Length: 504
Image 1 (tube, rainbow, N blue to C red):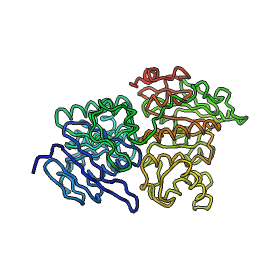
Image 2: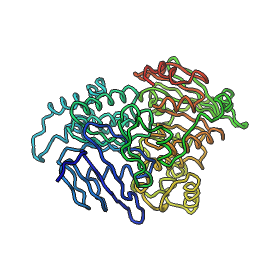
Image 3: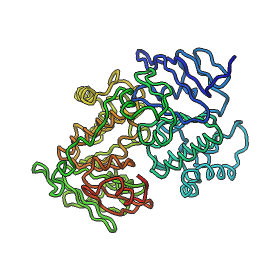
Image 4: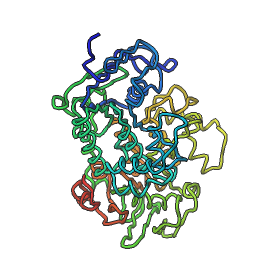
């Protein structure tokens, strides 16, 4: 048998779920020592292939080869134990264990081996310090259940880096990282690729990141290979988008920002009062109907403000007033009934109801507000209308969310609020892990809601997104303190980087 020129080669991979064909003879090969960008739209089959390569699900046909070990057609064979590590969009940590225990757990090869707590702490601190040394020491003994999505993402990546695997499968690993953490992660990956021959399969929808880290790309389109192992130096962004089967997103074609403002300074929209005032030490910000307020900076500051707005916490340092009246919501349901909607970027833990069908997911917010539990005829009708309006491809309203892609699930979370018409909509990284086309659709939905008089509060770690979409931006420093309020022409990537102390 000839030596395989690649560390991993997938040939003619086929996978279907019932009548739905996801992979239709797809090819992908990854060489040792390279960072390989794996690109495609939501629902194209990327996550399915990653699960097949890592042995999480079985393929229906095709072959997998790992170095010189050939796997026959069918089955779910994987290479030697611990030679593949995966960071999925939906994180796979054990919430009842500490950070140290989660990171050290893969090193335990025998069920009854003695667990060394001190050694686990050392392993965890060393692994996390590659990305965020301060967080490494502060979080090593905390339960994963007590961590934010951002912090759990760091733990998941650290565990993968510590695994000693020869192939890393990274599915949107930077979706909730700051720019500084992303750059440190990329430096680690580059070093491991060069020094250790590590192969990295990297999934991202952020073109700038793809250019920063990857050597070659393969593009999947409708379950088939559209581009196979093309050097990124020989393909343009426009060609990549075209091969993915999507129209380019050019949000710069929107009206100039000063023409998009919707009476935010007066606090009225079509005669309806809608003002939101947020106060803390050194900051007193009041915005009105139709304003798109961006939150910029690491998670601590934006999360504290979002918690106060949505009733997760009424005891932090923020004072909130609606239409001139002070409010302090004690629970999220109280905020929702007062017209404040929330869309999380953490689909798995704070968004999608995985064990309930799509119709229940679409109706979830309405049921909280109306104190309803059962499916009504109007919910079915409204659900079908929303699927059609948002171009959500689903077999049935009664299918589980797992049957649709992660990006499509994100649209479900926004769809919950469309017919409810909230006066304030709080968005936590709403485009996390979604493709270029879906981003365009989300931008359009949010602009339409603002045009109807809603106040939009949008936290994003993508400065280009804030610069193009927002009327006003509240910036936070790395310690979570608000630093400045930026408006109109001040909102650009350089100013945002300066105000937050983070690279753009």
